[in-house]
Length: 109
Image (cartoon, rainbow, N blue to C red; front, side):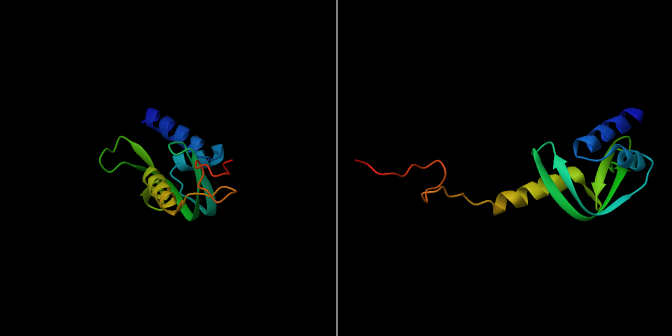
């Protein structure tokens, strides 16, 4: 179990949690906050969560493994969902001349 605690502590550090917060989580304390920005190493991006409850729990399928839950949802699943939501809202950006980025528009002589 010690190896699993070290793994989950490393993950918590990567997503932006402070040492004291990680210590509390490993002691079974649920952390709460109005808002927090988490970093997803998988998506190389920050995501903001509001009214959060963060807790370390055992995996339901594999009790010897731990996972970090954000509002009752595995944080990795939460990252994936937020990333998909973001991808749906992104529209092609327009350049200075009205062309989509990557397209060339100009005058020919």
